[in-house]
Length: 476
Image (cartoon, rainbow, N blue to C red; front, side):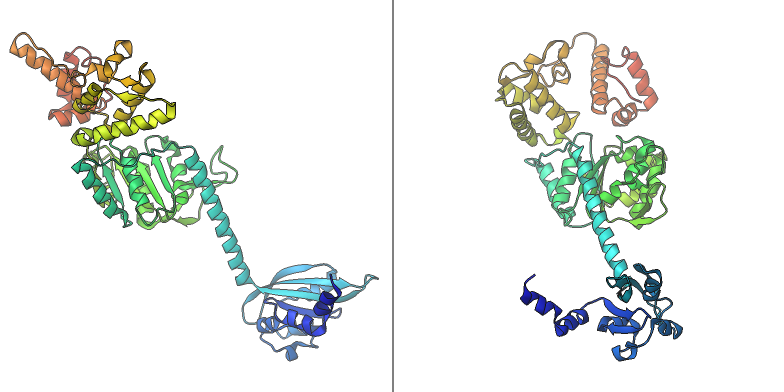
C-alpha cells in the first residue's frame, strides 16, 4: 500500500467518513462494555442519537430495555466472536456480530460490533435461494430436454385446411388459454404445439413435452410434481423437480392425454385450477405458472360418458380446441412433406436420393392411415433400403414388404373381382374392415364406431374372416 493511500485511509476524518457511510450499524465498546463509538446506522437501529449512546454501557442499555441481549458483552466475557439475533425495543430483530480485539499481550482492548436488519438478511437469503432455484430449474430443463429427440420440422401448410390451422394457432398463441389439440395419431400435434409456443409471449421460457402414455402409472405423480429427498426407496438424496416446476413460466405439452389414469386426472385438475401442487413426500405448497397444451387422438367426450375421463377436467382443458386434419385431407401437403423428409434424410445419411414420378403419384393415391408419422417412416425406409438413388416402391417386394406393397391403392393397382355378387361384396367388406382397422391401429372399439356397428358384431366378422382379416392384429 502506498504512503499516500495509507495517509488517506488512516486520516481520522476519512476513517469517520468511512464508518458513518456504512449501511450496517457499527459500534465500538471498551472492555467494560462502555460505548466509545457509533455510526448513524447504529443510531437508527437503536432509535437513539449518537450523543445519547456514547459513554453508556451496554449493560445499562439492556436494563433500560433497548434490546434483549448484548453480543458485545458476550464477546468480551467469552473472548470470542459472537453472532446472534437481537430483539430491539421497537420489536425489530437485527443480526449482530461482535468481535473482541486484543493487544500484543492478549489483553482485551475493545469489542467491534456490526449490526444488520434481520429482514434485510432474510431478503438476501430469499434472493439467493431464488437464484439457486432458477439455476436448478434450468439445469433440470437441460437434463430433461437433453434426453429427448425433437421434431425440428416447421409446419407445412400448402393446403387450405392446414393454412386455417396455422392461422388459428397464431391467434391462439398470443393468449395464455389452455389448448386441446385433437386429431388422428401422427398428424403432427407436437409440431403445432411448438408452433404455438414459439409464437407466444412465453417463447423465451421452456417448452416441456411429455407423452402421458410413455410414463408408468406409478411414476406419473413424481414425474409431474417432483419429489422430496427420501420420498421413496431409490429417490435422489437431493429430491427432484417435477415437470410443472421446470416448465414454470413456459409451456407444458401433455401428449396422449387420454391415457392418464383417473387418479392423476384429479391431481392434474387441482393444479390447473389453483396453480398449486406439492412434491411427492413434501408438505410445502408450491406455485407454478405454466400454459397447458394437451393433445389426444381419443374421443374424450365418449370417455367421459364411459367414466374413463373426468368431466370437470375435460371442460377445464377444452378451452380452445384445435382439430388437426389427417394427411389424406390435406393432399397438397404430401409432396412438400415428402421432399422435406427426404432432404433431411439425405443430409443425415449423406445421400443423394430422389423420388421417381411413380413414387410421388403413389404417395398421393395412398390413404396414409398413420398420417405424417407413417409418411416419414416410409421415406426413411426407402432411403435406407434402396440400392439406387431413385426411389420407387417396386424395390420393396418380398418378405420385407409392409403397408406400401400390400396396399393396392398405393401401388396404383386395380382389384379384379370374379364370382357371385354375394362373394364379391363379402370380399369388399372384408377389405374395407381391414382398412378401417389398420387406420385405427387395430383398436376394435374405434373401428366399430367408424363402421357404424356394435363392437360384438365386428368381432364376429373378424373371426369369420379367418383369424382377423389378412392377419391384421387387433388390440381391444
